[in-house]
Length: 370
Image (tube, rainbow, N blue to C red):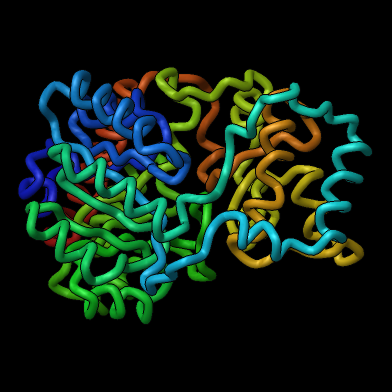
């Protein structure tokens, strides 16, 4: 399961695992893949430093990377307070009414929300990079497209490859023109922010659009057979995120959420603006239904929606209010039926990949004989 890109990065398997959990990122790299830590939840530089220190101590010298959320265009002088002031009172009341309807308790006095979508802000993402570039990261990925030109230059000066997510061939060509090194073709099936094009269509379109840049396939990939299909479409690796949520190393603190993920089928997700203001695939819940209801106020644009619902999401998660409890996850959730270690997931991926390759080779062999 090696490609030119995986050999360049010195990893055994061309499997790039995105995760918000340091223990999962380290385990992915130790298992022979490439762990990528999501940075969006780190608003304090010391917290990111603490977790990168932990990864360094537990990755056994294997390579890893960081994923940030950074707009390509600089936005200066805008504070979180400025953004908060833009949120209409009617939307705040809708949140209060919905939480009251389901009896969601308040957070304890002095207890701050643990979930804030502020990593999108230029100054927050740049402080994350100031920390990260002191570590031997090999890859910087940006979930909002190409990072600013000076960030790309700064990464390249440190021999760090830069990746950007794309939901269309047009977006991918813009990334290539911006000077990034890897395009992640993220299909409609993926968890989190996605475009409108399915992976089977998107991957070869992006491969053709940005050749010879390497492309990682993302969305709807959770088995070795699907990895083999991605390689057949021209990808030099796969980008997996949802699959790690139910691993034993993941730090999900809600048993009920884990139960919901394990019980969910591939049809139990929805692309909703409820979480961040941009369409993001997540478990369908009564929370997403409320925001998607035409009778409601509708979600605000990013980043207003994320700031609006931050405390509400923290309350729902802390008190495990089952009807409202959800998380970003892709359609591959239907394959996530048991809690397993990261290593066990890799064992399953490699077995499935070998089986798929053998199957194709047998078919190709029969064709040659005819």
